[in-house]
Length: 185
Image (cartoon, rainbow, N blue to C red):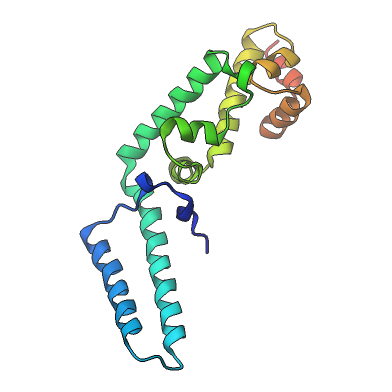
C-alpha cells in the first residue's frame, strides 16, 4: 500500500469530519492502552495491526478528501491552468525549459505529491501527464496556426532538443508534428 501523503506539506494536512476524527482517536486509544499493558507474546502483533488499520483509514480519508473537497480542488485546477497559460505565453520556456510539477507546486505552495494526487482524482492524470497534455495542446495550436518550424516550436515550448519534443508529440498523438501539420493542409 502506498502512503504518498507522508511527502505532503503541513498545509496539506488531512481534513477530517467529526466521525472520521472519532475513528482515528479510537484507534489511537487502543494503541495507547496496548502500550500501557504488560508486554506479552502478542503485543508487537497487536500494535502492528493497529498501525496498519490507522494507515488504512488515513489512506481512505485522504482519497475521500479529493472527492469531497471539489470546490477547493476546482479552484486549484483553475490556478494550474492560469500558471501554465501564463508560463507558455510569457516566453518562460525559452529561459527555463519545459515546466515541471515542482515549478507548479511551488507556485501553488503545495507539495509535488499532493499536486499529483489532487490532479489524479478529477482528471485521472498525475502532474507530469497534465503538463504534457498542456504542452501538446500548445504544440498543436502552434503547428496549425504558424509557419514556425518544428524545431522552433519545440524550442519555444522549452525543449532543448527537438527530438525530445517529436518523441513526446508522437507518443501522445500517434502522429509526428509534421504529420499533424500536414493534416491541416
